[in-house]
Image (cartoon, rainbow, N blue to C red):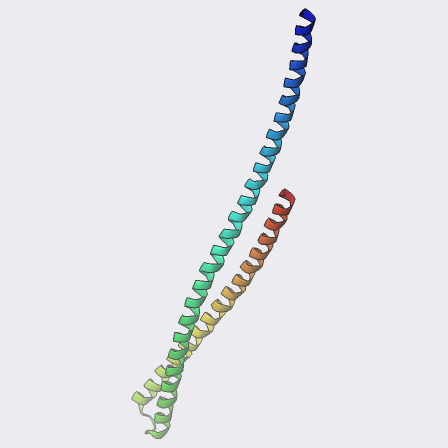
Length: 153
């Protein structure tokens, strides 16, 4: 009887030890998979942040383009006015100061608006380049996430 009790005890200890080792292995694997999922989620968060930046920049670009269109219209109107005043000066009396001041002011306004249009165009080009860079970063981040998911599977 004593011998049977010893055998059962030894067998129980062996079984419990084996089960404990298997349980630890499962827990470590589970923990590792959770860590990998956490890394993937972190990368997906970065991807979403990039997408948000691109969306906001696209909205800003549209506003800049609308502003440029308005500035372009103002510059065009100012140029027409300057031409008109210049033509009036040619047809008017020599030395007419009032006409001369109008023509000069109109030319300055046209120059100012043309300069504003140029600056706005540069901003638009810079914004487009930034959006292209963001789209490239989004593409790279998406590929990185896909690779991580393939390696995790």
